[in-house]
Length: 159
Figure 1 (spheres, rainbow, N blue to C red):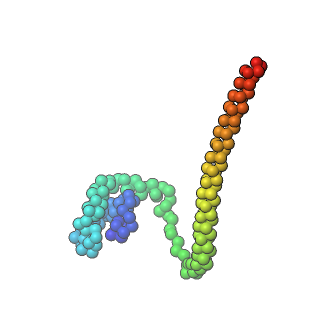
Figure 2 (spheres, helix red, strand yellow; figure 1 turned 180 degrees about the vertical axis):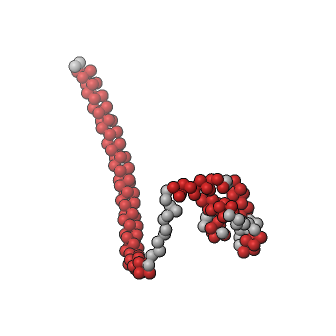
Figure 3 (tube, rainbow, N blue to C red; figure 1 turned 120 degrees about the horizontal axis):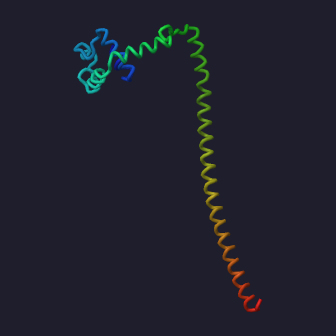
């Protein structure tokens, strides 16, 4: 019961499992379990788990089990791999590890290059933007100077 309840996580489904075990006569947080697993007995985590367990109704657990049975999950039996299948899978995994490592290194290198390119382009764009602003200001100043003189000249010429 300890492994189901505490080692695996303490999620809602683990609490449902504990509630089901408790409803079948199992004792959670007993003196024996505290001696066997002192990390849980008398700790805040253990006390919190027991408080959470009190708030769960056995009707909720039964409803969940009914839903699982309606889905046909009670007829599914996990299949264990044969030793030969396990060997094939492990050898395939071992063969792929160097390739995965190489892919990781290359991806890291490519990411670094893209970051450098992005930084360089950002600097170039900012520099180009500054030059364009200077050019536009010079054109505006030249236009004002040219037309300002031209219009005065026309005024002086009477045109």
